[in-house]
Length: 431
Image (cartoon, rainbow, N blue to C red; front, side, top):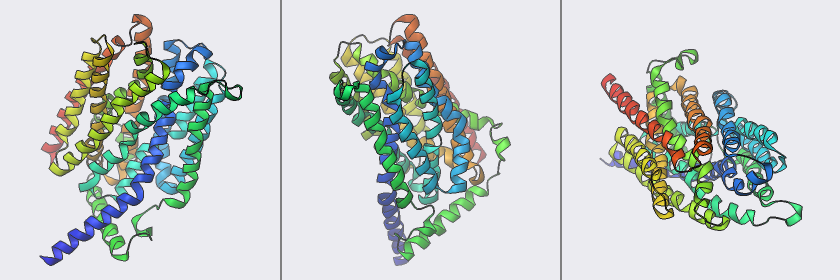
């Protein structure tokens, strides 16, 4: 009995130490990833007029990030396996920080298209790379809550960045620059610094972690090796076959719903809110409210999924929230109910992530995990960001309504729920 208690205590102490060592830093890095990819939404309040961008042109520019992300994500994640997380994550961050800051130099639609595309190429692989990295360090029983904690950086980025970006837009005219120039420069350069810190702070594998005690290092190395061996016992799917598997494309479509909700609102929500007559500063403050609430609830939902060991409904219910919230928001015509319903959508979009990625990583064999996770994330970003961000702009151009442009995502959420329930039932039947 005492031996079991000692082992449990060792497990808890080790996981706690790993969590406090890696997670705050990775969250900070991811927070800047989403600030740098999403600040175009707030910048648009000034930039679109200066560059002569129509809603369709702005939607296309925003979507190019996700198209490049799709093209380069799998190669980037495979490179992380080859070169190690420490070096490759640093490379990703330094390049995307520099490119994001250079968005201040764009002169018109074409230069904006170019910069958004290479920003997506630079950042490709960061998220699935971190998810893969966490599978080297975090036992599966803790993974949903850890992934949810890590991904709280997504809504937290918009919560922090919306009012900060609104303040930076007030720097308009300082040094002969527009407010949106200052926004891109001052939000891009800190990422370069964090990328340099990566080189000295991160450790590639548990057996190299000198910041763990010998006992903790041995326990964690043995535990993670056992889990890797268990996943390796599953049928290994070669890379060329992986993307011919229906369940991989099914998981990507499921993830596309949450990706679409998060990406579309990240890019378009400031303009939607400002259409109710708000000032730039008011828009920044109101825009941050749904993200604060979503940040808190996604962590609680991930912990609840781990505590109960249930993944299927913890993934499906958030998808239903997205669909219901979007459908009702398209009918609302005043600010308060729109903010309430957008909050509901974002709670679903972000609460979905912890349980889904824990479930997806458990369905993939070890040798296929890097390509599989990257592939699922890349396809979901292509559909959710590359396609749906454009669709929103097309519908807005055609109807003149920000609210009506939400409707195509309602259909995507219905399809995603159906696919998820089918895949999870099939997976349980196969065990």
